[in-house]
Length: 136
Image 1: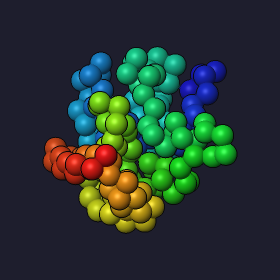
Image 2: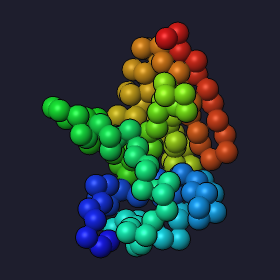
Image 3: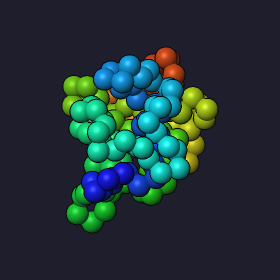
């Protein structure tokens, strides 16, 4: 991984679920440069979209006093969380190998909480998208 620090640790689920245009990598397929046990095998030379990308869980870990629960880390929850394209709401990118992951455990509790708060939610499982519009 070079001298740069990978703040994701061994979590690599975004390397599977997210599309990477610069690598012509479609969503829901492992990146050829990803090693699911240790991260990107070409970390210092990864594309700009990978350099700039941070999931909601990772961003939350920089909050004073802590962030989202460890159980919500994508490799544990099987869900990558992103802020909606308009900067509001939340997108649950669910690992197709665990299509119910957003309904169980910590991810299920978060989904219920977000909906109760009236926020917009998009659930993405493979090429299927489900929108839940909040009252916010």
